[in-house]
Image (cartoon, rainbow, N blue to C red; front, top):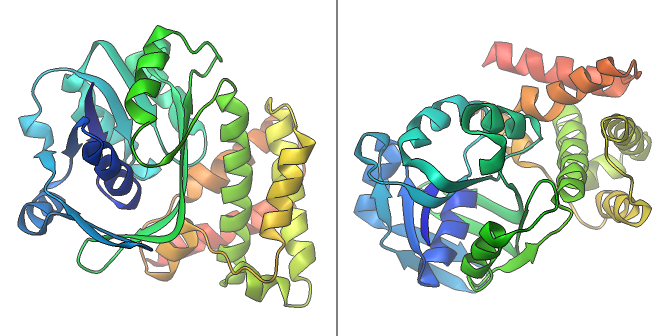
Length: 304
């Protein structure tokens, strides 16, 4: 299977490397700066088990040739419009596109651009970041990759994707209910991002502060009400696990949005929080805590 990995940051770099190491034909689509960095140093993974280096196949938008069987999109959500233009020449009649982005807005955007039949569901669970020299740092052993048809019909095309991905040295989950997985990932990451960015700290600091537990539970409840109104069929055991994970004061957690904010980078405010507010408005739901988070993030973006 010919695979194009759009992006070679922490997510794309990690999972793309694992696919290449498993023998898959993987090309990384990157910008000029990342291209030069990877050409010079290779794609370096620092994992809990040691350091590995891949000499990756690289391409820039101007040098893409031929169609790909699978395009995995791993950029930040605010870069999606440009990436769609970049990958367009690589999309053929049989191409499938698997976005691994935060939120859900990107699915409709990709479907409108390339067609509903080309977009499949995907998400990952990994604690990873980029180091100062562009190395991918996997901070914990967690490395799960979920995928499946958005309508649950995992036909022969999806079976081919599963065959390519399932032996790539990561924990793969071929799901026949990927939409619920996507809703639940959004519930987790948006709650985590909201409380960390608003309180400017990790969950341990928040939960051990006066009112911190109430803040986390209030944000969680508002987000759950929004996604349920939007079509999420609540799975009580799954949502309870998410709240339990977030509410453990012994385990300090932060979100990628919080880490980007503390480093002065652009953040996915509209895609992670703003979109929730738009959906809440559609159902006349009161979300005062989410509104406070959104104002906080908008002020940050104005001050960058």
